Length: 158
Image: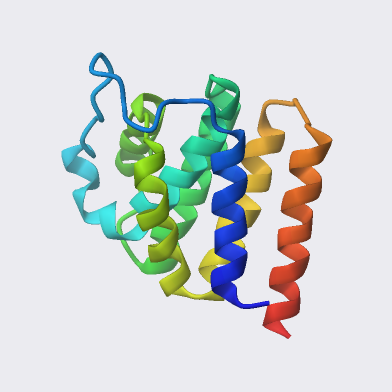
């Protein structure tokens, strides 16, 4: 299986489970990335979009889910050599809590992750599993699907 197909299946999974409108409602404009995180935009913004969409599939983003997303982003920042201290973490917490991405942002974000390669896709899928499990509500269909994606990715790496 090609990496592009794997990413496409993950995106389809998010789209199928998402009940939100394709565009953000006028009352909820997209919050800009905080000034303290502008240097991190290239590193993690495209990971936050699918993870937040996944987090909001049930209509709510639980604090535990947001914490998993922030932890993933902090790991990305550290691996890239970008600044990843307490100030960045605090700004990420605030940004993630207020973020309401749209389905229109999903495809470009996933394409960017795909271009980063297999390791980035694997990290994103691992983070997605953590997001799904973070609030303690385990939907067996969701976990099974993401486990299958992880297995497919592992096959690609061999």
